[in-house]
Length: 460
Image 1 (cartoon, one colour):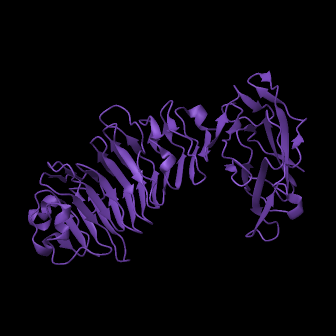
Image 2 (cartoon, helix red, strand yellow):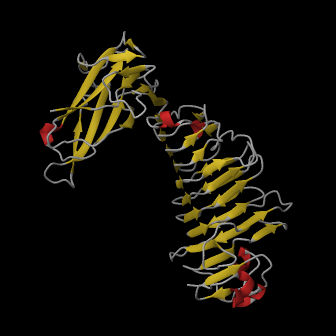
Image 3 (cartoon, one colour):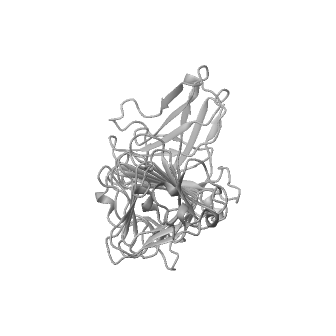
């Protein structure tokens, strides 16, 4: 492993800025002849090439500004070896990670962009292109921790992950979109995972839409967990009808009041948004639940609307239902589905899981059904599978069982004009082990509204 040292003003020639052991002490004590002037110098000046497993260490006071034309490329490992790294360290203690180093492009070249290639780990950097930000080559993996990535211009694109098999993972990092027209882009089968940090506008104002391009060329995945998204008016912007496969998950994120998840309802089964535990207020976040796909939605409904009064309230005291609205696209061969929220169940002693629902429509076992996977009672590492769907699903089937033992409400008033049902999933036919079962709800009936109670009854 080699260590290459960088601080603005460095004059190192050949391998003078390289060490085979981690240096201690300050950059000042090293002297300018012992470090390079900018990151790009590491790719051209040393006689020993920057290679697999090597680390570039920048002083946290490093602030390089590129004013000449051209883009900047940071090279990770592209030959199957250990990832390379670029890490910001303390200017007074070169062996201690410390965020603060920056490299920005302020040239007159309006197309000057940043490119990240290969398997690469970044720590504590602030990066700003003049135009776009592009990361990822085929099958590359880029991890950025405590970094800030900045877009400044109108219609600038941050192609965070845009190549087949590419993954970009941001850990407690910030994406600063300083113009309302800036956008993120994930496409080509790539994956963006962001945990912690922010997507925000540091100069004030809002972000019209976090994503407005991409998800083409094979689609992509964008997963946000615990991210501050309070500056975004919209998550998906523009016509998503032309997008290819889309898998977006937003979990435990702070949102702006009135945020729009998407301009339309993702009218195809290969496009899906799942948003859970995310809201503009703490009380709502504990039960927030949204799935959008195939032109359909399922969203949490608090107890000011339709809900089952027998359900278990959340910590705030609120009782909820999951209100599903299907589109005209639904059919027996194109159902809308979503993973039902579940808790631990004692399946060794409980035979039946009962799910309660209500709708103004008459519903049959072909319109509404559930699948269940759960660990087997004898060989726990093997899962059992059950389905409540009619065996002949091409026929209408029989009406669901009337739920005469529950009390449904519309706000404070008793619910009227609805059919109240329950569906039993009987695990006694294939006894299971205690654990968290996986339940998926399916709806084949088009243009229908169904309210599900999120509390699953356990019937002995």
